[in-house]
Amino acid sequence: MGIVRPLIENQPAVFFAEQRGPLICQAMSEHGVTKQTVYRMLRRYWQRGMTLNALLPDYYRSGAPGMEKPVTGKKRGRPRVYGEASGLNVDAETRKRFKTIITLEYARKRSKMDLVTAYRELLDRNYSVSEVCEKTGQQRVVRLLDHPSMMQFRYWFEKDSDVFQIDRTRRTPRVYDKDMRAILSTSSSEVIGPGSRYQIDATIADVYLVSRFDRSKIVGRPVLYVLVDVFSRMVVGIHAGFEGPSWVGAMMALANTAADKVEFCGQYGLEIQASDWPCQVLPEILLSDRGETAGKAIETLIEKFHTHLETAAPYRADWKGIVEQQFRLIQANFAPYVPGYVPTYCRLHRG
Image (cartoon, rainbow, N blue to C red; front, side, top):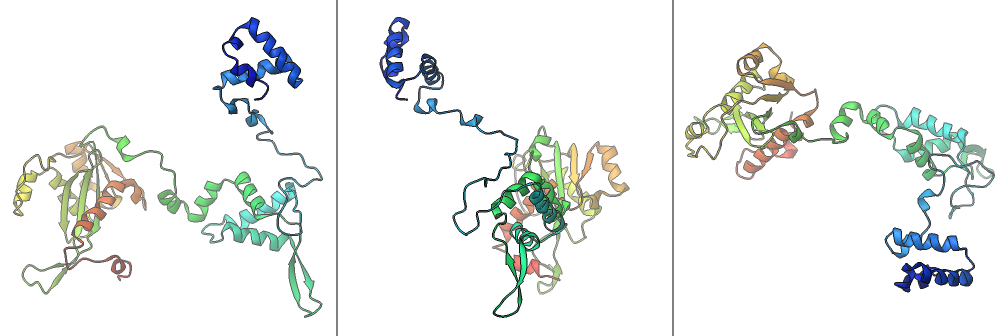
């Protein structure tokens, strides 16, 4: 910056060729540089924003991206701060040992071994020797001074291995696809407006009901069916009954989606306007579990009402995340007010 600072500050003379020449010759004599160097620095300063960092070297061009460093007798990388050993360079044989430990121990299906434990296993197998203690006469395992570090092991693990595929194998594909996969889109991208797609699901409500004739007798926990419109996130149909999740319960919930909501709420003493719950249509696409819709009974809905049916894969509740979340929201509203609510710890230890 010191070379071109007098030129930059001498404005507007630096912008005129007849006045810029003497200034450049003065900079050449003071700093012992060539005319090309002065012009290159001046041009770079103007083209890159006229800031101090504009004259920094192009560090992104340093090194050889994608190429391994040559193997020499000198230890690569920064020197170790602790320990007597200076470390060692990772060569092809060392990387092969890394790969063996990762493949046989760390990347196994449902493996509970973490990367630190895999590193210790590597040292025990390849960088340890057995010797007899002179004082006790017992055999013990001693680590070699020169062995790869944990940072080297982790670096080459991430470089030579498909980290995501290994994680998918360790957790099993079903668990990984449900909990760890990358989220590339949303449910809203599949719809064009209200009524385009509904999601339906059933759950056992976290509340015990009693008989209307004898309040001292518990009649059980109801099965709650809910249909949610994906575009608006509005609950468009509900059904509560004591029959298990089946086509009968799903059919009652679907019937409720096409029912007049003003009349439906009036049966339970609730007065609403038609604009309060404007839902009285069947969907164009219905996404459900395979349990309720696996059968010929669903063909009537498909053929007579021209509803396209989609089923989620087994153990993939995340495909119906909107309606699954609705269950939590519904039950969170009545949890503080009903004496028969089933708390979380009871749900985890029931049966």
